[in-house]
Amino acid sequence: MTTTAATDADNSGAHPRFVEALRELGIDEVTPLIRRFPEATRTAAEAAAALGCELSQICKSLIFAADGVPVLVLMDGASRVDVELVRKELGVDKVTRTKAAVVRETTGYAIGGVPPFGHRTRTRVLADRSLLAHDVVWAAAGTPYSVFPMAPEALVAHAGGTLVDVRERTT
Image (cartoon, rainbow, N blue to C red; front, side):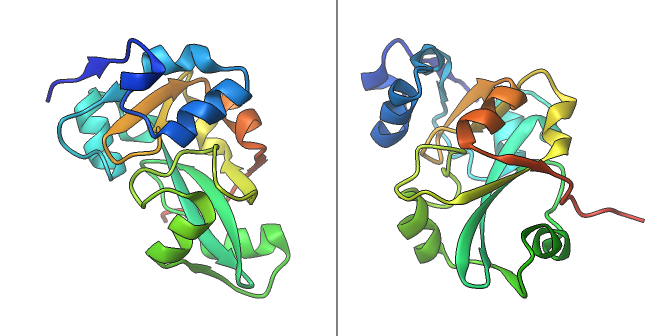
C-alpha cells in the first residue's frame, strides 16, 4: 500500500472537523503527519498493515453505551475491551456496544474513522493503560482512510481521557 504525507490541512486526507479540532487544541503541527491510504484502514489490523507497525500501536476509538449514555474507550489495537471492567470503572449497571447510528450521532464520524478527539458532542473518555507501552500510537483522523501519529500521553490528554485498566485479559 502506498501512503502520502499531508502537506496542508486541505489535502491531509483527514476529516475537516478533525483538522479544525487539531487547530483548536493548538496541535496543528500533527496535520502534516497525517497519512492517507488509497484503501480503507477501518480496522486496527488494516491500519497496522498499511503503516507497517505493530497492531498494539494502533489506538482504537470505540463508543459504548453506559446505562444508555455514550462513552468513548481508547484501546490498543491488539486488545479487546472488557465491558465488565468498563462497567465497574464507571459505576453503572450496564455497558453495551452501540449501533453505528449512535457512533455517528455522538462523534460525527463513521465507524472505522472515529478519532480520539474532535467529536460532535462531549463524551466521557476512558483510555486503557496499554496505549502507554509505545512512544507513538496511530489513530484515525476522522475517515476510514486516514491516520495520525501522536505520543499516547498527549493523545489521552487531548482526548480528556482517564487512564484505566479495561483490557480483556486472556488466560
